[in-house]
Image 1: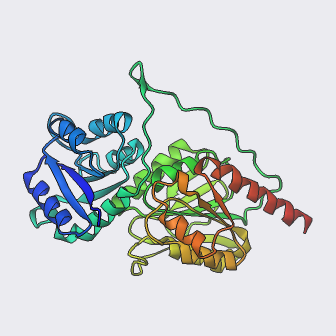
Image 2: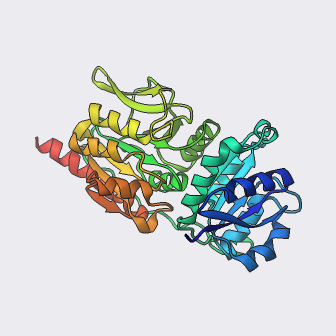
Length: 359
């Protein structure tokens, strides 16, 4: 068996040793080097060319974000951030994902003192996923600045749009950037959107606020009991499943702290199954990049209930696991690249609107 070769960067000797023990305990991976900060690591990384890098954020001489940006511009490779919570918290970690980190693991200072054995499954599973991830080079700096973003084409709103239509989105590894790219092209009066992204509780509010700043639509962490409105997106909070329900003639959100499904709470399957039950053919399903199979069974239930479903294609996914599983069981009508997803989904909304008018 070819082992995944991992390089560890963390300023704590304790953490470096614990990560080394955890990784080396797995039959399919090994630590090939470790360093206390990025400057000490640079030549070692060039010499060893690891498959995956684990990276702390708060380190002496050069912080993890600065190093990550340089790395992803010059020599991109899969990176998993493993760091304690800081005063800047979730905004820093969202920035890491924006710069190209595949995933993150949040650990508290209390957990460090008590050892990291409880993180073994999370650490090793995320390293496995990262080893298969597609990483992209950041745009080179010009005069100290990144290239300005290209203007996005306007997405024309459908005629005779109905508030009854819904867009239901699920994602995991790589999903923060994929969801951002999908949402920012949507018109302000698009159908209401429900989103489940695998994230811990400390992240979802900041993620929703970031999406709200970048998008024409309003984006918020779901509170439960809200009426779902056009031009609004509701993100599952990290502590609860998000479900679609009906209250009379209106669609509303519901939160549940039931047991995790497919190891996750929030779970994409929980959201998709609720959409199948309450929205049927009024729903459009979208499954984006992610590790594992969460969402596949729920998306099949949506299709069987009359929904029309899209999956992100392999070439544009960071990790193709969730879309691949949904495609494999026949849950998907169209497989679409991420840059095309917004346009194709809105074309489908327009087609649904036209059909409802003829009826």
